[in-house]
Length: 285
Image (cartoon, rainbow, N blue to C red):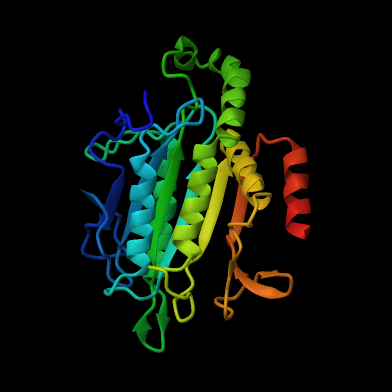
């Protein structure tokens, strides 16, 4: 498949709007799903879900998916309807999982479904946010990075006892993906879309938009590898100058405030501890 091949999992588009279709937020969440990103009002019972997929060699399945994800983040941050900014969560799944999801039936990968449950919880939490009597809820955006946690052509994945034999094959692919330019570019561009200036304007006066980076199992290996590459990249693209503190946490570089990813969470990481040590050393520098 070429860089611009259409996704077999998401052929019609890779960005979705998920709204609560019930009349009472306290009732069971019922999904109303639309293709494309909607401009959601503050404290709305809805979130945006974007998908970006990668091949085993680390190349994009469809390079347009990254542009669609960054566009919906920038649109949320520059919304005239909601001036509270965005809350962005990027997640990379691990072994035995994929980015499979059928919005019409709800079928798909279990971890993808659990990721959406987490976004729902964040959405309901944002709906509770008020400042001086005004709605202060941010637009919740989830970015799900998918790869073949099992080879789709492997017969091992259908046999519970034997499917674990794919470990060394899949961790090798995860290592290749984590070091690939497409994944490094994706993490950089998602962070920049969330933290960087909009339309070339200064960040001063713009609401702070948090970003959380999460990787699970072999997905944590992919995330940590890409994050380390960006920490060591010339120009330090993850650290953007900030004129004033925003939120409850300050990040400083050489004593000066910077915008920087708010949290990197590696769950049951398959990465070698040497990668974590290099990340800590780079942060100390």
